[in-house]
Length: 207
Image 1: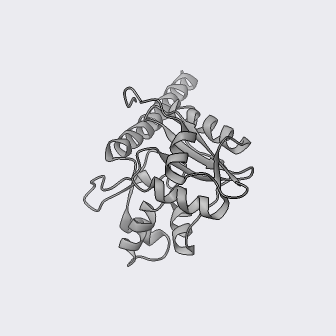
Image 2: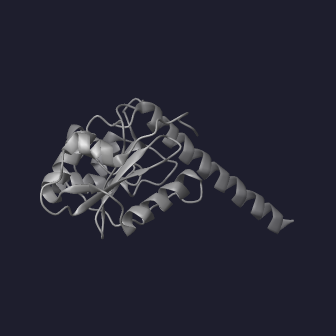
């Protein structure tokens, strides 16, 4: 899975352009993370991950400004950043399918409910927005669920890419539909590989 050549980018320069100089003491640190699908920006403090987005996401500047208003952001890393980078690398290497990162969910109660339910969708599977609405006990709130799904600012870790349209189409994805398709295929391939490995092991035991 490859996005092709990724232009060199500097998280500090990007943040400076987006936010200007920080005011007061910054509580959050932003760092660049390389992935096979392109660069991501991770924003964390010493305890939790606040944002993880592909750099081309259209909503990224606004998301960064909102976070900066709450605690200030500077270019840098924390232990949470390093842990995030390691787990993302393991995910793309096919070594892990789930994450156990401490997350800061910046949203309404309804949005957080949707984001928490997203984390219960097993890797390698997809569901419709209507099913997601049903699972949180709000079957008539399909559009609101779709908006909350789109407002997720911790990509990959909170797998909003696992939700598809009623007709099975990919529908929107802030990181680009090609990335959504790549993530779904990546997870499906890993699940298939694990299943094949399990069947082979069982046949070996029977033999």
